[in-house]
Each structure stands twice: as structure tokens, then as C-alpha cells.
Image (tube, rainbow, N blue to C red; front, side):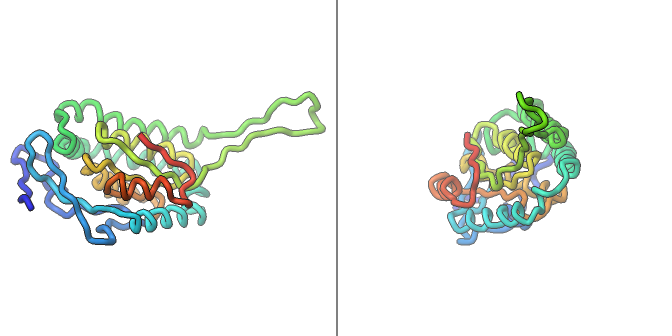
Length: 246
């Protein structure tokens, strides 16, 4: 296997790259159940930047079970919209705090210029969590007008659908993860997200920030793995109510 060589020009991301990458399952950063990993290369230089866990169906089962427990217990679905919004805003603050580090990771993982990630991807990732933090308290039902008022009442009530499986692409790895996670959490759903195998590096760092923000165990689960195995298992899982896929 190639030797991991950290680019000396990196100023912020070396700490994360210097430790073993892990996945987030049920509130813990863990290795794959099989112990397998796969290499991640900097597309601009071809150098190895990390080895990340290779999630398979067993890991998907664990992650979905954790999300199911977190939803069914009310650990997230029964949390008030205001409290959900506060945690989403807290996560936005943490992404903004570590913006330089995340931009470096996105650049060496995806191959896009650092300046682009710094100016576009990261600010937009912060913005979506702040927007959805406010949106959490605006998800309301409505009372519908009828021709027989007083005899009948017609209304809609919006409820979270449950566990949402999310599969993101390689082109905007962190931003697409945030665009999928934030609205699902605002609505009261729990999440199992699989990062693109071509660009999996910012997902584990985002997972660490999810824990730091204080989200309850199982509410957000983040996996790294291949579409043919982890992605297929997530999309076909009977305990996943909705799949968001780009």
C-alpha cells in the first residue's frame, strides 16, 4: 500500500488527516464491522491522503437500527422544533469555526481549487443549516375551508416520515451532505448518510462536528463505502422510509 504523505502546504487539515478516519454510528465514531478500509487519493497529485472504513450491509444494518431507535423513541422526532433548530444552528457555528480546515479537506479530496471551496461550498454549507434551523419552527399544518363549517373540520398535519437514507455525489461532497441532512433533521427525521466513495473525506469530519454539537445518539449516522454494497443495502433497507439520492 502507498504511504500517506501529507501536503506541507496544508495548514489546518493535517490534524484530522493524521488520525484514522471513522464512521458515525449510534453516537460513536467506529471502524467498519469487517475492519476493511479503502484508500482515498488526492486527484490533483495522485498521492494517498487517507484510508477510510469500507461500510458494508452489516454496517448499514447497525446505522439504520440506530436511526430507527432514535426516531421511534422520540429522541429526535419528539424534540420541539425550537430545540431542533438550536442544534442545527450550533452545527452551523461549528462548520463556520472549522471552515478553513473543511475547505482544505474538500480541495484535496475532490480536486477543486481551495479558493472555490473556501468561497462557495463552505459558506453555503453554513447557510443551509442556519436556514433550516429557522425552518424547523415553520413546518405547520393548515385548516381547510369547507362548505359545511361547523359540521365538519378538515385539516392537515405534517409529521416526520422516519428514517431517511441519503446517498451523496462526488462533485460537492460536503455541501450536498449538508443539503440533505439539514432539512431532514429540521423535519424531525433521523438520517443514515453514505458519502461518495470517490470523495469521502469531509463526511467523517462532519460526523465529528455532529457529535460536538450535541445531537442525540442515532439521529445522524454517516458511513463511507461503495455504492454497490453500502449504497445498495441502504436503498433497499426495509426500515428506511425515504431515500434521497443524487
